[in-house]
Image (cartoon, rainbow, N blue to C red; front, top):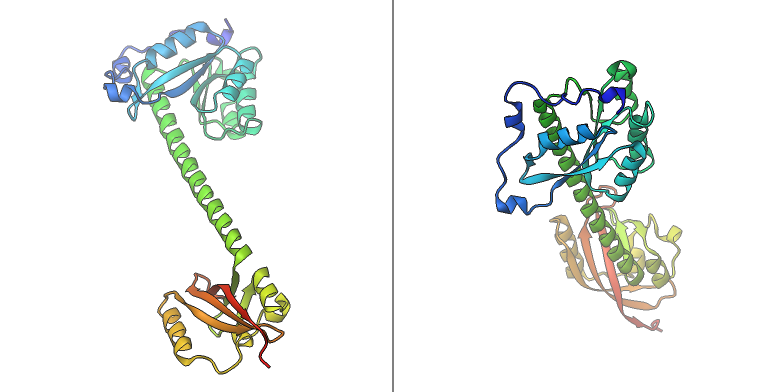
Length: 300
């Protein structure tokens, strides 16, 4: 047993804290929910026993606690590496070395890159560690002297830590879902980009950007197209009804679709089914996506 753990009665006080922490057993439905994983890291077996006893009936959001145990810093890192969904670590500072717990905290964040798990440091010798320096220099979530951490305070610390973990986990899951949706959208756009002609243009009808397919179909380089009027690709006269319908739809913020005729650089006529839409970009508020339906030979 280390000197810092010579008082195993640090969790018990003489009020009703035990009753506050030991809640009523959860309903059967709640018991079926996956528990919150809490890792107790301490080289004193008695600390493990007392901590587990004090929290044995705690429930948060209908989920009980499941306890994992490590008796050294190295064992703690191995457990965290093999169990990525641990929500909370109750971490002793002084174990096999005087700063073993601090080494664990640093490696969890900087080497294992685990930003979700909540880390609560506990020490039996606060005079040997500069608390303010530790809080500033290490990415931990709380710091307690064991003699001050009553059952009531332990309960409060654990619930606050689990609440923070749950919030971060939900935010990470939401971000991952958004990223997956974004990746899916990009794949769809890439597929469209490979098979359709795409051009973006401003409110004056000048081309702002085009894709490679657009350039190859119309036989113009991107430098030749950007900044010029879309009518470069359509020899007058323009179908008045079609043009009016397109402008009216786009002006109302709606999409417009029809079959249009355009000409390549070499004069060959192209018939395309196009859709023009409004996008959220003040510099290029309109986009045209089209597919070539038919290519006619250059008229004599």
